[in-house]
Image (cartoon, rainbow, N blue to C red; front, side):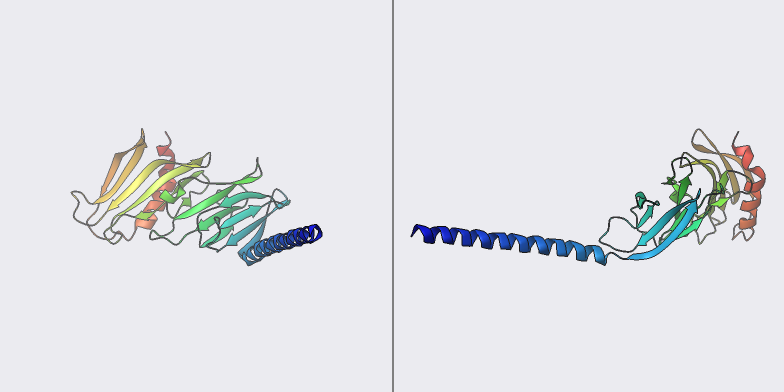
Length: 232
């Protein structure tokens, strides 16, 4: 009888071990399957300072990130959490190093993010608050940028901000506001300088109400010729 009880004990213990092994195998199998299902939507390689970096773009709702940048040791040195539609490799700030432009699908056209390469740390850093400056353009031979965004009334009203990037943050120093809708007290183009973080009107160019077809040329020419006046 005693022998029978001992035999039954070992039999039950053996079965329990087999069940545990099976559970562990299933668990490992599920993990491996999950990993194999994570597919890279787009992959690129860029070279900065003779070092290779790998860019991986994911489109998976189960992930908490959408883009990774890895160094030559395959260490993740940048992780982007917001969902992006597309990215482009370019030298955004014209410092000789490749950066990343991240594009989104939004109601506001040309809202982007820029991830700049830091040549000192050999890492990538996102420019903060760039989403407030849609369609950013770099002014040639300078460290200043200007933006453009609609401000209502079927684009009869619009704005363009002048800014620079310091410590990966956007610093706004000027603004051009176009008002052509017709219901304002004054129509025309308003030039504003940022003083103590507030817009102060320094010039007004009177225009009749309506769509200003020359606004693109006006914005580019004005900021190119006058941007240094807003730094003082």
